[in-house]
Image (cartoon, rainbow, N blue to C red; front, side):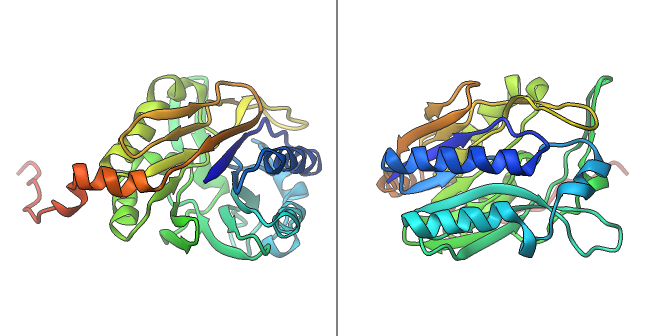
Length: 280
């Protein structure tokens, strides 16, 4: 299955970002891609809550979602919108960080709200409190599709292996990890985490990423690590997009999932055990 990972440098302007997304999707389809994936917060990278309130939309009104659904239907292609930042009806006003899997008719096959929030202090100069602006999801999502069983996750989720284990044991063959990864952690952690999730579960890991310094009309500008990546079920990195924006094509062979799991059937070897006791 010819698959396209689209690496973006999204700004905080959803209209500009949509034009880039549609352009790269067109390029991917011309290259024969059957499945296209975009990164986390494809529609808007912003650290300004005031700006987000002014430009973000509810799911039903989001132009990016509508345009990509129309594109998928017009070109009979599967698309994973890695995630969109969306308004919700929550009383506290927090947004959703929501991933969408769209089928070749333009229908939404599955959607997933990022569960684990990036609340960290990477350094004195680089602090994130994602849960202040986004409310966490509560449900893991597995989509049964003609192109394979797909488990949806987003970015910081990758540090929580039990989520991926649950998806794999439920049947996932492909795990998606669209991201806007910090350069500080990405340089050391990105590839090892993705490889670990692939090896532990005998799955393909597809991780389209944001890259570079992001233009911000308001608030502090962000930088992201790039290196959109595909890791095969044996743990080999078969695509690393570096730091350039654009379309990166890879052929997936899902037979390698079953072959790998036969060689190392660790998904079948879980055992119950008594948990560790804390200090008295």
